[in-house]
Length: 279
Ligand SMILES: *[C@@H]1O[C@H](CO)[C@@H](O)[C@H](O)[C@H]1NC(C)=O
Ligand SMILES: *[C@@H]1O[C@H](CO)[C@@H](O)[C@H](O)[C@H]1NC(C)=O
Image (cartoon, rainbow, N blue to C red; front, side, top):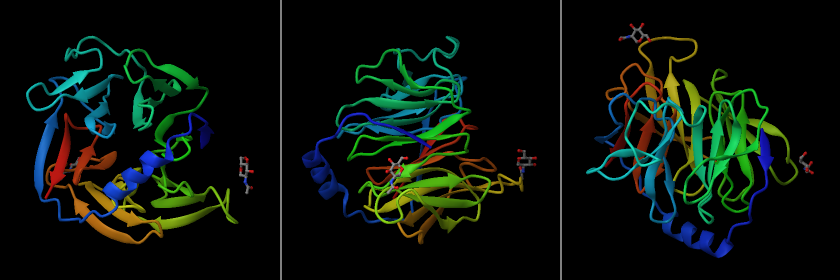
């Protein structure tokens, strides 16, 4: 895991954010919709939203580009404004996205190019750090602006909203680790929770102190049919809810469960859509 300092964010805005999103009630997520990619494009493995208006989601796709959902009438567009699947990759192999909510900077981890950043107006990404084996997931600390990302691992980290720890999934180890950033246990790791399947990306839930993990039961070692699940945990590793996506993502691994405005956005490298589960 590596960090890089960016810009300090504004605490007051964060406090407002806290108050708005502090009290979420969870249902069973039985309603299903799809955000479908243009023909010939597959593998949405991210679903990041920008700013307080929650524009997006933005996603990475398998040919190396980043796409933005422009609403049901337009659908997804590449960030150059096209839907042409034959234009070829303009990036490498981006695997995860995370916005810095105050500055609007978009951080990207790319399997080939490491850690990249794009300004709020888009354009070509700038490499911030390279030389990694396989940079996969990332997360931006909302309070400090530090960027955490994972090298040579299956999934993605999540920083707690109070900046005290980072959760790290062990894809093949079937567990999630908690890495302390502060206090007596700073720079030490504990096993937070053992999982029934393979944990990929972990994202902060909208309810403070909780997280959603994308878990694929039967991925490694392979035991088809694979059962994809969203698993919600708290900071102590207590499993609070498990939502099965097995009907719509039958026998497929998933990469990501991102909660936004009470809905779960589910990404997989094997589909041509982002699944949206709501109540
Ligand atoms: C934790 O590690 C960081 C980076 O090596 C270091 O700067 C910091 O002082 C360490 N903190 C403690 C409490 O050991
Ligand atoms: C699930 O997918 C694997 C290949 O990835 C295949 O071998 C298996 O037959 C599939 N299982 C079902 C029940 O479709």
